[in-house]
Image 1: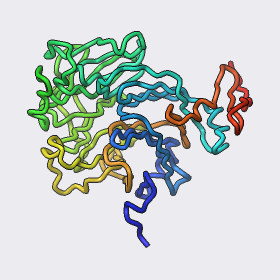
Image 2: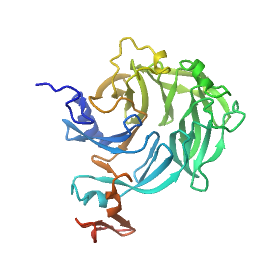
Image 3: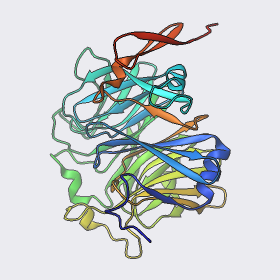
Image 4: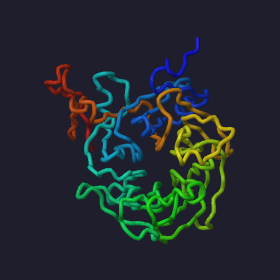
Length: 368
């Protein structure tokens, strides 16, 4: 008997058969943020025929930066940095010998409510798109944020979301491109021409490289090529800034936001159109299914080859990241006190006992 969506467990997914097979072959997991549900969700293959989801609560999570060793998550009024400890993962008390990585909270930066969108690790620290103040900033704890750059068309540093700066590309540790939904200088002026007023800005020249973009999101540099999602058009595109143009790779017929690329495949986050939204009401996808999930695109053939659909809990996706060489990731938040019962020092890790009173060494880590 089929169950209705209200009867299914939280974060239930359905998927086409090729998806777990592909993730298993690539030896990777997916991680997404959904500020609507207040979660960061990991999706991992269980063999070649099934997927498993793990959801952790964060306060309005949006941008995620990640590498093998650490991760940062931008939240409502803070940015949290987590460190990966495979040794803690192996001995996680609730499920021993299940996880191959565990991202544990280490540092929290208090940014204030400035609507941080994309973030990235760089040579100088953590770079962040500060959407409220229309600027690119550094997060390092000395201040709430340190403004480092703003578009030439923005005249004052004010918390007025003048152009809805959102996307960030960092190349070799240095910010290279940003995207915005408009190029106006008045509070929320981007809303006036939201479906066609987006821009790509080249930070080397400090000039708009491509204009008239339909809601650009998630710019991603992969193997020397610059990709992005045009959310209002439902398109995955390759941007060609030196020529001021873009090439459509494929049309996805829905609101796309969140992009990760690995090998020959692009993983694209899809969101439901929000009912009653003045922004979403301007978008028209007449044949689209209006679902939240992930589409898998084979780049050489420019075709959709797989799909993950959220049957419950998730309606909007902001960020999508791929974790290479990771088949069962876990992450801890600061809302659940279990993170306080783990310890990691340079050569050893510990978990507290069942009474949370005594820390017991779990595994010695050999160092070079």
